Structure formats: structure tokens, C-alpha cells
Image 1 (tube, rainbow, N blue to C red):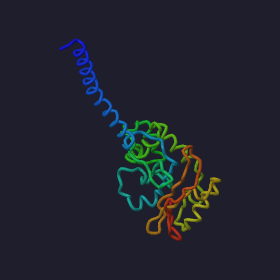
Image 2: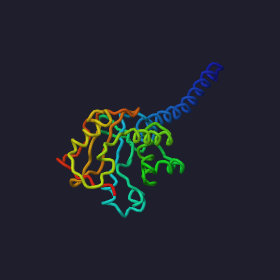
Image 3: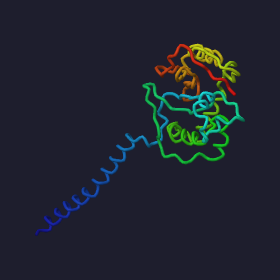
Amino acid sequence: MSAGFRNMFAVLLLLTVFTGCSRPARDANSSVTSKSKNSSASPSSNFDYYLLALSWAPEFCAAHGSDAASSECDPRHHFGLVVHGLWPQNNDDTHPQNCAPARPVAEQTVQHMLAVMPARGLIQHEWATHGTCSGLAAQDYFAAIEKAFKALQVPSEYRAPPQTIRASPSDIKQKFADANHAPRGAFRVSCSKGEFTALQVCLTPDLQYRDCGSLRDCRARQVTILPVP
């Protein structure tokens, strides 16, 4: 074998080895990229608005009074509207969930939030399911919940009604809109079997009121609002 042929053979051998070693690396990188684009487990703050979900404690307690996991129905408390969660939403009615692995919320944060979210399990659930899609750290996510809830002005007749009242969903939304100098479309009423169960408030990512778009609304002509005990 001539020296020239041996040199050419060596070059071809090196190219073959290099190509064989480099291909798996490119394939691995490609699969990681594909996974990160399609996986729902990657952190994201890519959403259009927040839905601040507030439940009406008297109705919840009438239906779930034996729920020992929640202090919402503790007779020593007198809850009206309480926070269910702050949910990232999209304009096309989709909503990201469980966007990243979630560590348990710190006990100090849990203790602080119990004043507006009176259930430990709910606090942990909301962080794992919705908070991980906010792009915020847990402490900042719950700070946003507290800020949004405390900024909401509840009309006097809905703060702690001493007796059952009836009102139309349209009237409820208008009263909240007027009290908060917000568009009426920023509020949605939820009901079940003619009873007021919850209020949803639509907010921009920086917590300003905005229209809820096509978000579902209560269709009852009037709803019963149970009194705060």
C-alpha cells in the first residue's frame, strides 16, 4: 500500500469516526428542543390575562359544611367572598395548567394566605396547578393574589348580607363595575340551581381590569345570595 493511499485511508477513517460520534449528539439536542416546545411541564408566563376566581363562602358551606379540610366554614369566621385562585387564561378560552414541578408552598406563606384562601390544601393546589404557569415565584404569585383581592371593592350589599337576598347577575356585575370603576365585562357570575356560587374577575397580567370576552356567565334571570352567618 502506497504512502498516499494510506494517508487517504486514514483521513476517511477519521471522518467516519467523527460523523458517527457527532450524529447522536445532534439527535439528542433535537429531541430536547422538541420536548421543551411541546411539554406542558416547562415554566411559562405566556398567557393573555388572569382570572381571579372568588367563591361565595355561605353557599359553599351550605353544600360542604362537613369539609374538615377548610376553615372556610368555621363558625368563628364570617366569610363572604374568598379567593379560590388566580388563573392564567388565554383569549381563545384555553388555560395552561401544571406548567412545572411544584415544591410545597412555604408554611409562612400558607399562614399568611389563610386569611383570604381559608384552606391549606387549596393553597397548595392552586400553586401547583395555576401558579406554576404564571412565570412568578410562589411568594410573588401569592402576593399578586393578595394585591388583586384587596384592591377589589365589594359593594356594601354584598360584603356580609345579614339575610338572603335576590339579584340578577346583570345587576351584580354592574354594581361591582361601578364600585371598581371597571368595565362591566370584567366580571362574571357563577350560579348553581339558582344560587350565587362565585364571582370571576378578569385582570391583565399587571392586575388591571379587562373584559372577560366569551367567558361563561350565569344564565339565570335572578340568583339567591345566601347570608353571611
